[in-house]
Image (cartoon, rainbow, N blue to C red):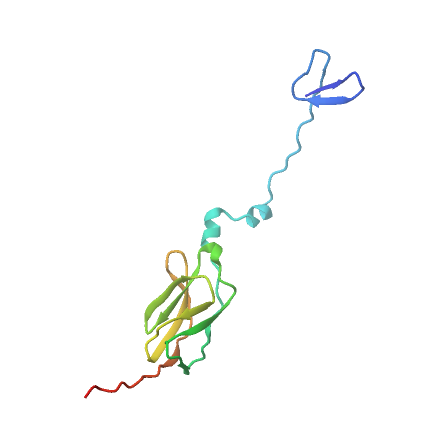
Length: 158
């Protein structure tokens, strides 16, 4: 390290001498300390973080309610999902909605889902939280929904 004073009296420092009149300085050794055991534990390795996954304590369909009748001639209705803690999308978790045992909406990040043109009749709905590999982390209880769609009787030609 070098130190010099210019014509105006300004003191400057550099790692390279600007000219022959610069004074060479000896820098003091840097103080270092090894990491403590507590510091090592607080910083998990990357693969340890990957293993730690969010543990969902509550997952359910809040709307429609179980055993509810939905009357919509187009067969449309919305589903509201409650999840605690919130869906961890940073770990690529997603929701998967099933009806009558078959997945009908997959890779959802929203807790609100709109269904369209659902056949009339009784249906069982459930939702699952899945990780990026598609493994189910938690599944809700099934609810029953009765879809009513009006049938218009047509006159037969004579």
